[in-house]
Length: 123
Image 1 (cartoon, helix red, strand yellow):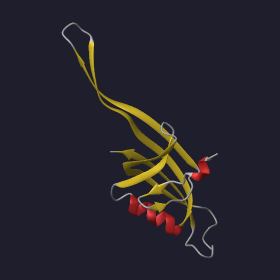
Image 2: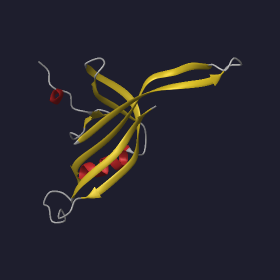
Image 3: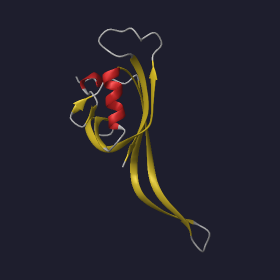
Image 4: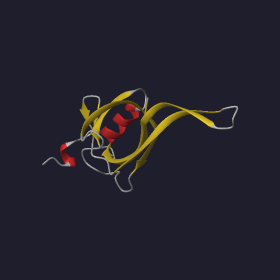
């Protein structure tokens, strides 16, 4: 039986560190107009547009990669609850926040440890 750990997240072809937080929000994109009779006329433009709030603990190398990912569109391959399998979505990384962890100044093998928080928005 498969487990969630069997579905690491990919940005493009690169497996990223496991998030400490991954919160998904699905929205329907609608156009709502009022008719002459006073009722709402709803046109659904899109179902299930995904937004993700994520947080990672990572090395300086990975923090720098997240800064690079924030500069352009990325294909995010992650587990999808509806299909129970991988799904790839074209997304943009927004609201990037990088925090240097306290007392990580003298770590060997990295230039500090960081907490990276961001949101991902599907195109």
